[in-house]
Length: 135
Image (tube, rainbow, N blue to C red; front, top):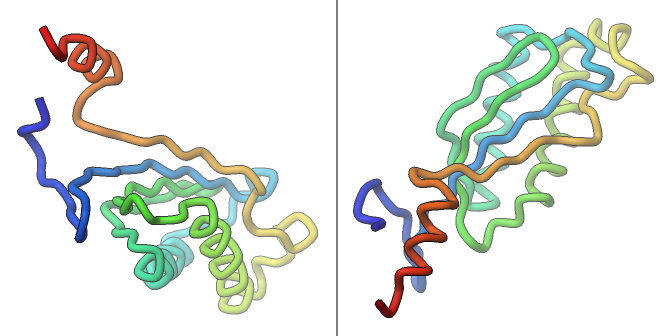
């Protein structure tokens, strides 16, 4: 069943943990351009190393970013996302001071985010595989 794909490993596990993260600016303010996106991506890569996270893809629209990344079982995703949001917000406001006027009370990111685990097979296939064990 799990023969396709390339897996990650550590000392005690074999795994494939892919995630799709979407983060929006506060009140969907349209402030992200190509330069800001590049800085946000660079910050993601720097912080991700500390959490055993690897960037796969990063892109943006004017008011949100889409990020595809791999993680390890021990990666603390909520701590990582909060660290990333905090650091990237600080950097963007420092490097692009004119952006502050466009933000709501100086806040860059919305508090909420969307995180989806992704994979090569569906939940129904996994469920069927588990149900067929022992037959």
